[in-house]
Length: 277
Image (cartoon, rainbow, N blue to C red; front, top):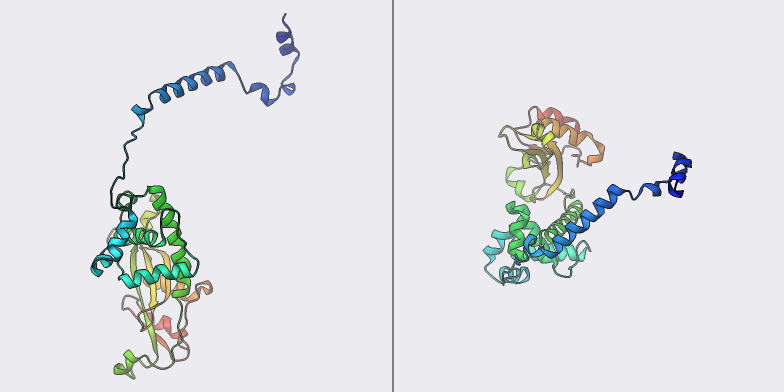
């Protein structure tokens, strides 16, 4: 009997380590097969990989941005849903606050432009990639960057403001709206949710939406936004959750102050009564 066979007979399962089972005859055959397949793939890579450049437009993303920002004002508004001065001020604010910085190949202006076109026109990454001559990975990376920056900036922009006396736009309605500080309304915004939860997010128009409650002052500035509720949720239920949960920081009216409320909120005066002071 050979030395190898005698060793196998005298060995027990406890004596064998995991390393002894790393290479078996089956694994050796599989390894040889993988090597042959890899060799065949490398030898015929031109058949499997199309190396024809995909994005070959002479109008790069940087040139496209220069064309829009130096062109007619309406072109910027149609593409980004912002006037040129608003767009540039928005980008400068993100830079000044340190929320975004220029990348090696993509500037802040270009990244914000891609974000606004995706959000404003529900455009796919592939279409934006063809327009700005960037890969889908680059577009996805910048979309997430700008989204985080906008969310961080939103906590500073969407905040209550101190108002002394009636707003000038209410003077003609005085004294009927003497202590009115804003208006509350709800709207349905398109949502992207897993298939297992889409039923509760389908509203009466069968679209997948979320019910969003918003409050704004008379300067047309949002002072409170409450998101995340399913499209089938009742407006009153969304409102009660917004004003009763302390973590939401709802801007409560003080004294005789009150909000104008949309008629879609049934029995809302009774709900608002405890918050009038």
